[in-house]
Image 1: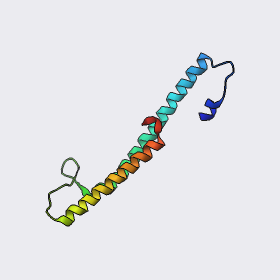
Image 2: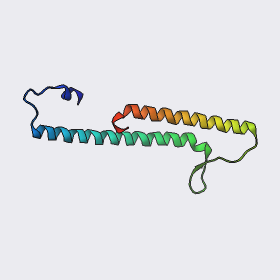
Image 3: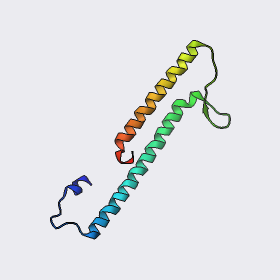
Image 4: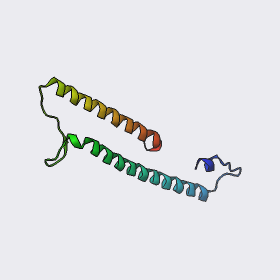
Length: 103
């Protein structure tokens, strides 16, 4: 599409051509959204596998966040959350840079 947009039309573009370009842009956006959705679903599967050890399955799935007075356990849980937050941010940044028009 970039190569096409670089082409100059000395006499201008006809209405029919402008309409065709508009429909093509719409189709390309739809395709880009479909690919983004597929990648999101793949990413979700990846996250589910990574989070599975931390999930309880009584009804709805939830991250286990129970009370503990053990300092070492608290520090381990904090490290898990920090790592997960970094992973989420990196995935979001990667997605945003790959699909800037959807951001």
